[in-house]
Image (tube, rainbow, N blue to C red; front, side):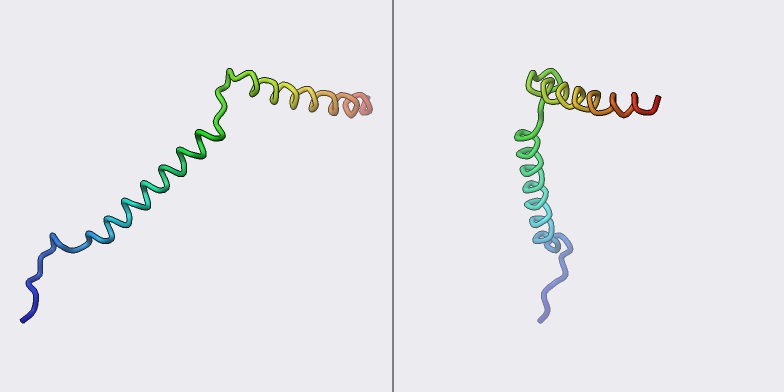
Length: 68
C-alpha cells in the first residue's frame, strides 16, 4: 500500500537546484572578473593610478604648507 522507503531516491531535486545555482554564481563571478580585471602591468591601469596619485599629492601639498 505505501511506497517502500529508499533513501537513495530522496534529495535529488535539492541537489540539482544547488548545482545549478552554484554554476550560475560561478559564471557570474567569471563574467564580472573578465569585464573588470586589469593586470598590474596594464598601461591603462598605470595611467589611472598615476593620475590619482598625482592628484592626491597636488591637493595635499598646499594643506601641508599651510600648517607650517
